[in-house]
Each structure stands twice: as C-alpha cells, then as structure tokens.
Length: 104
Image (cartoon, one colour):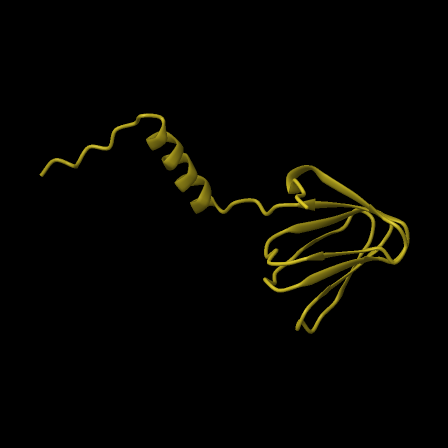
C-alpha cells in the first residue's frame, strides 16, 4: 500500500491503529479526536489531541492508535536547509548548467 504522505488525511475508528516503520521525521497531526503514539523500545509514549502535532524521532516501529474516532494527517518531514540547497544544485545541474573549474 502506498500513501502519499504530503496530502494524507486518515480517519480511524476508536481503537483503530496504523503501524509506521522507519519514519524518523514524519509528522503526525491530530485534526480531530485523540491519538496514542508509542514507539518500539522507546521509553515515552505520547498522547496527541486536536490541533497538536508529534514528530517521530525514532527509526523503528511506531504505532498510532485512536483513543476515540479520530482524523489525523501524516506528513513527510521538511527537508533540512542543506538538503534543499543540494536539491537546488542537483536540479540546476540536471537542467544543463555547466560547472567550470575555478581559474588557477
């Protein structure tokens, strides 16, 4: 199953659950209802209410459970400044920009 993370709203019934693997940096936003977020081998769990967001800071398995009927949004992390700069350079190079060696 593929989920386009940049525009995903998910509706979960009470006790509904989704499992997310290798999602470090993914943002979970609770739009309506309440969520319980737990991460494998992680000491702390999180309760997220309406209007609140939690960013996953763990690469292992994360379980997101609805404590009541809930609508949530799943979003990819924003790229770092370095990643945005490198992406911009890569796009320019791909569009025919020539790189010339610096004069000696």
